[in-house]
Length: 355
Ligand SMILES: C[S@@+](CC[C@H](N)C(=O)[O-])C[C@H]1O[C@@H](n2cnc3c(N)ncnc32)[C@H](O)[C@@H]1O
Image 1 (cartoon, rainbow, N blue to C red):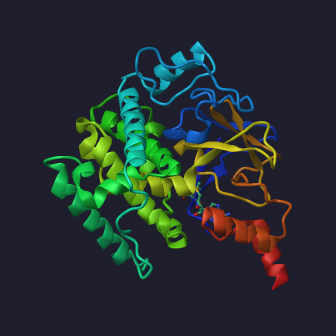
Image 2 (cartoon, rainbow, N blue to C red):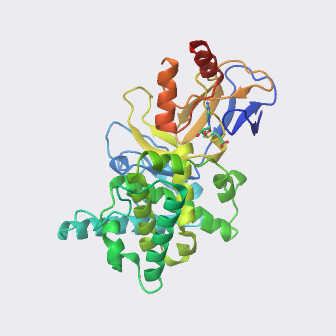
Image 3 (cartoon, rainbow, N blue to C red):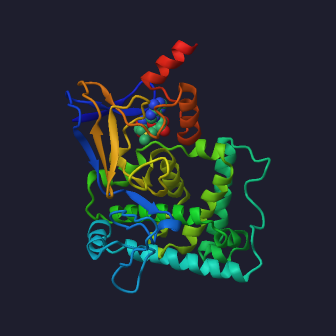
């Protein structure tokens, strides 16, 4: 019903291949390539259908001793998660190891006097030039490589505190990256995958890594901690895939492509419960006069036309609740939160008439 083609203002976009009536469901993005329910909410959000009942704790856990930090609203959801997300049973042990490492790190941190890193890698005078960022990552690589042969980064004094003092949001990022790395591992072992589910399909998405860290220097330090943590805890067979390039690939793509898992029904009071990346749903550009509505139905994202669309017209969603704002406020919000200058037809027309 639509094809992905280049646009003149913002990379690729989705263009109608035929006339599409209003109210047509043009796409369903079903299983995320990777996703995470934020730590604060994970007991209250079903790991399969994402049901959230105003803070009620769900009771169903995985069968067996591993809990992998997941709660389910029903046994049916639990069994569907295992069947659809982890048929090869590679993911649960990885998530479990992360959970155990977090618990251990928290205990160690409580018993030690360490509350901060010995020294941040990103100093006040750090310049966010590409070369500076690349050479910092090279430095991290050499620190990790010098220890990983014989041991893990927890034994390296320059890295240890960095792993121990991870923030909740960094554990969330670590889970998001770990799921993607398990997918990559499975793919490299020829486990059957659907096309939208390939690492290449994921890596083809846009990255906003440099915009992200240029705006908030702490994020570079944070990405480093996520990498070092995964290097320390991911089981041996996944280690060849725990590379700086892969960690940066996931975290950079999250910034440009993640769909927030918002509490339903959606309102300005809704909590953001987590984050999912659906490559197949990531080619819809933003418009301040959208003709497509995205709706979360359980764990799926549904994309439905909100008016009739002509063949050849671009189909766009709105990335946030901003269509009623004045043009400059919309531009500022999109730049601030999504790192791009909106080039949609409405903005161009309104900015043109203001000039
Ligand atoms: C989810 S991706 C959409 C697909 C993307 N255009 C691509 O080629 O991969 C979001 C990115 O597309 C670009 N984009 C989306 N809507 C835009 C708009 N209205 N104006 C300018 N750039 C836009 C921005 O770079 C944004 O970070």
